[in-house]
Image 1 (tube, rainbow, N blue to C red):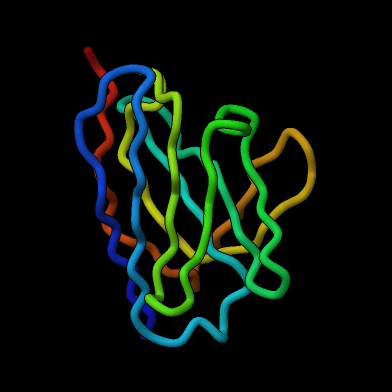
Image 2: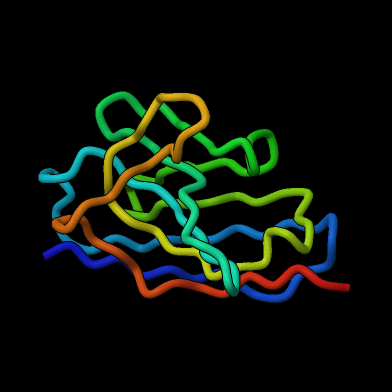
Length: 128
């Protein structure tokens, strides 16, 4: 069974950078894509990035486009989220999850269903 474990969160100053990791154990062959969500206190969960397995295409929400980048290291079975130019609005718990990438503008770049796998989350706090 696939397991996802996030790491790399922490406290960073505005304008700083962090790289989150999602270590994958198990076979992803039954899944289409993998991506990242975040949930800030008092807010709904937000899909922010997705990477399709079949061709490596990537998709981002408008809130992170141009600042965040999702990548995959097959040799180490790890998916990364590079986050640059962070602001306090990026403060949230970040989760990696399998799902389907969505290409419709204005919608979440990833959709996950009941059979998808989730990590436990890692806290990112952006504050001076």
